[in-house]
Amino acid sequence: MSRHRMTRRAALKLGAGVSAAYLTTSGMVTAQGLDKVSYQTNWRAQGEHGGFYLAVTNGIYRKYGIDADIRMGGPQQNPTQLLIGGRVDIIMSNSFEAIHYVRENMPFLCIGAIFQKDPQVIICHPGVGNDSFEALKGKTILVGAGGRSGYWPFLRARFGYTDEQVRPYTFNMAPFLADKNICQQGFVSSEPFAIQQQSGVAPLAHLIADAGFANYNTTFNISRKMVDERTDVVQRFITASLEGWAEYLKGGPNVEAANKAIMRDNPDMDIAKINYAAKVMNERGIVLSGDALTLGIGAMTDARWETFYTQMRDVGVFPPGLDYKKAYDLRFINKGVGKA
Image (cartoon, rainbow, N blue to C red; front, side, top):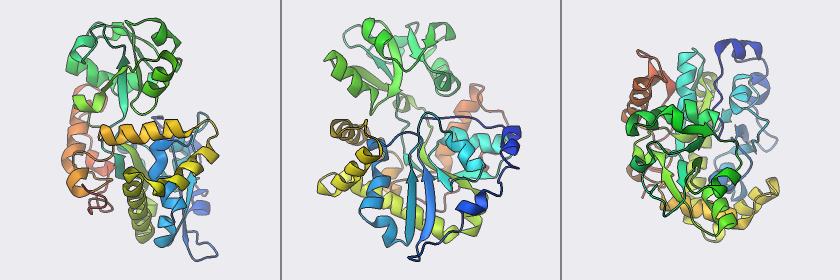
């Protein structure tokens, strides 16, 4: 998932931050009297986006008076640039990006988080002694550029890892498959499935969130302008999205239309991959765990944001003294939707 950091200078180059383009996507009403809201995902359509697709296909957005435009991401797109340039209303992102808004004094923030656990994992071969995070000290781990500036400083401080044990990850699983002593980054709901399909052996997937990494993922990041001027529309879009996720996680016949829509948008996706993602999201508590169990899907808390900011400040990712509370707003979530 993308974690592109945008500087203030880059934002200005897009057209003075929140540009005139913003006016073309915000405040629109369709001929049917529905409020149009666009949401940009961070990658091609997949099971990890299932709740949004279900809210479309099963009419939940329309029930709340929303004409939802769920836009599929991909390798050539930068959701943050699209948000800052005013080309989309809301983007799928994470806590890192929201705190970077504060750091760069940009008028954007996070208003909800579908994934209580960041789905990033360190994947290892079974049976070679790499059965825990502690065992990976000194072992070769393939990590991409985003991971090195994101979760890697946390792991390094938490488990005594060193930068010398890191090798570049090029999103090619061949090196991992060829050497049982190598570990690699991945997402709990995708790469382990692909590895098992190719090797016939289920790999170990160490979920970084279970080691205490407090990053929220699959978030709703939005402009302050839209939050202030279209508060009711934003609330209805968020509530409908959360209801869509509650239904999607239940599985059964209600998800069929959503899964077909995912495969229509992304022909490389198949039902086996989608079912695996849904299974793992439920088993590992990616959506329903922690605060979401009592506050509902999409939950966020002041305490969790403080933990995340503090742990990343202490490893040098964020500067001290940052007013991290400007990175989020809790008014649209924590209303018990889909709670256990």
